[in-house]
Length: 273
Image (spheres, helix red, strand yellow):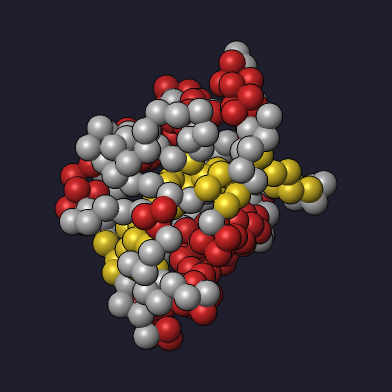
C-alpha cells in the first residue's frame, strides 16, 4: 500500500539544512554543482538559511577525469572536493567546505560537530557504502536522511532513506535505506567493480555520458519537492538509458517487505558511481 512520506518537523524551521556530500566523482560533482540552485530555491520559498554543504573526497583530479567530469587540465593533481567547492564559493558567494579525506567513522565524527541532516553518498564501491551504512546506523548517530546514488554503464539508481538511529526510530513508515532494501550493495565479499580506467576511450566505453547528470538531476528534483512541500510519494528511482525510462521507487511498506524478502537481486543494477 502506497503512503505519503512527511519530512520531520525539525527540518521545516529556519535553521540551515546541513548536507554532507561523500564522493566528488561523476555523480558527486553533478550533485554538488546543482545544490546551489536548491539553496537559492529554498531561500525564495521562505527558508532564509538555505543549506550548508560539506564535500568529502580524498581523490585528486586526473587527466581522464577531464573527459566526463567538470574538471580542466589546470585542475590535474588537485583535490576534487577542494576544486569544486572553491568554484562554487567563488561564483555563488557561499561558505561551503571541502574535506580532502576519505569518509569513515572518525572523519565523520570530526565534522559532525552538529548533526548532519542529509548525507548524499556518491561512492563507487560496496565497501565505501558499507562504511556509510554502518556509520549512519550507530545508536548515537542523528543523520536524518541518506541519499545514495550509483550507476553502471547505461543505468543507475538513487534511493533516499532514513537510517535507523537516534533520530529515526523504528516504525513502519520510516523510509528504508538502499542497504536495507538491497543488502548486496554493501556486501564487499561479492567483489568490486573494475577500477576507473586511465584511458579516456575506455572510460567512456564503461560508462555512457550523461548518466551521472541524469541521476543527479532526478535526485535533486526529489529533494526540492521534499523541502518545498514537505512530502514525498516516491523516495528514489531507477534509470535505464537504453529504454529512456525512469521508474520511481514508491513509498510503499509492502513493496519494501517484498523487496527485502527476495532471495536474489540482479547485481548489475547496483554498480559504480
